[in-house]
Length: 432
Image (cartoon, rainbow, N blue to C red; front, side, top):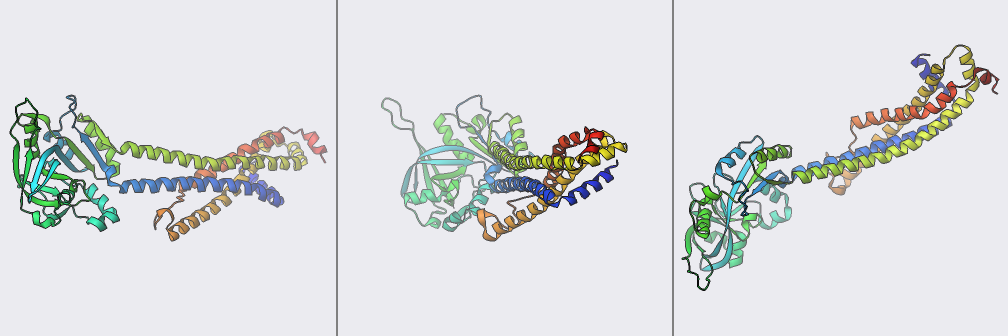
């Protein structure tokens, strides 16, 4: 018996028992619908989460820290920084020497224990990632603005003796007219505390000009003075009682920013090959993706369970079909039909039930998915905007579900099919 003949007979028999066929197909359709909707929901959540992660620029930043006293930590030097800058996919590099001033004096105002961040002016001071994050924070933009420099200008390579002062530090010492400090001389004092019985080292006094004021919304805009790396190195030489700090110790911190999220992992591996220990959010991103995959699998599994339960209905329907066609089976066997022919006939009929149910479930799932997405976008629920899909139904999901449903239905039909194939033709012909 050819496959086409089996299909014709299958749909003919299904059409004769419309109510039973409809109820069985309904159960299969519900299972198919849930598999597609749940899979689409999981896919939508994962896609939206990944898109939001890509918009968080801090996830594109890889950090290297060398602030400890561990001699095993590789020095962050200019040669390796240039190698990092030339890695494919790197957009920006920053490098700084962190130190502290004992006291600073500006316009007769003083502040004690002020953090100093000495940047290599060949690289960036403010990364695009930090700028973009502040621009995305509407509250900060409304309160402070989005420009990193609110007065004066940023440090250039030719003004290594000038400094940037944080807006937060000016607020702390009581200076509110930020423009008034531009061009003023700031005195930076570095000294050791007096210890009885220990010779007192003369304090280091550095006089610089204020080139600009850093927006308080930025990290450098708080209780911080931003200088050149050479000025910071001079301070560190004083503290450590030696010379040539940059060449001997290197930089305290370095940040490497990638052009895209997809480049982070590759860049991170390249930096590690240079011998550095890195810190990045790539592991957190991977963990989130793993969690989303698990959620997606669990949601899909819920629909699969319903589909498997619906397969019990297929077994019942096909068992009834075998019972009703017992005499017909006897006639077919008497005319030379083999067990294989009989088995194939009922397996194909089971698959036909699965196909009809899957087709109905798929159509309904696509309609429901579209409606859900439109409702969420129209009401801006959960931050869903135009172009986003909370229920993201892929073509691959639909094809897989239809094929899987047909296979499940055919497997469910094997038991009744085998029973039909084993019927004795004589007993079948006597069946009333």
